Length: 306
Image (cartoon, rainbow, N blue to C red; front, side, top):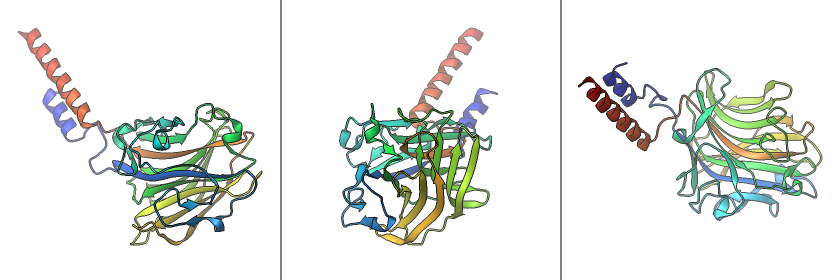
């Protein structure tokens, strides 16, 4: 390919995802609740006056919460605590204006179910040296929630809240892990909310429940939640709900089904994930580096010819 054509391809996005593709999702809060002495009833979930994440969920049962208001990006946790996140991709500069931005340009290449290029950016609550008594455990009841700015993904793109034992220091391995994902995605069938389960040991992928994504006109945010409401019961249920710009919850909970999560392991890990179809889009400084590199190649080639 000639240098002129190569430069044109870069300018037109010929080597990255198309300009019309979804470039980012915005996460407003990431939280979990845990009851070590009993159950968590969905009917007890409440929202009080004030800002997320401190005023919603189950009173006195909050396990962790990050509202991304301190401007200190992951891997550091809420308010710069030493409790670090596990990550895929780069979150440098992604925390601002009380949101955490999941951006295509900061994502990394991932495996794909459909054979098309796919990139990933994820955040996992992963305290270093996590003891079993501090984990999300089979013996407890717990819930994990992610509050996103409302977004309709482009084809092949999605955002989700997830439970997995793959990365847990006291859980399973990548060969034996279970993944339970509550996602908003777009396929050829349209935009959908889906609860999805993958058992790596059995080699199975199952859609537990799926429905058309139909936010009301006044919706501004969406809350995705995985709830294990009974102690010593492996069943986890998926729910989501819309909120308006004042963070008042709209309508009823949408229920997408239930799935047994634990298969031999006794703990799991909470995460927030985004997937983008296509290759990562270089950030502006990357374009500059490419142009400088091409200029140096051109100068070197001209000297050789001379």
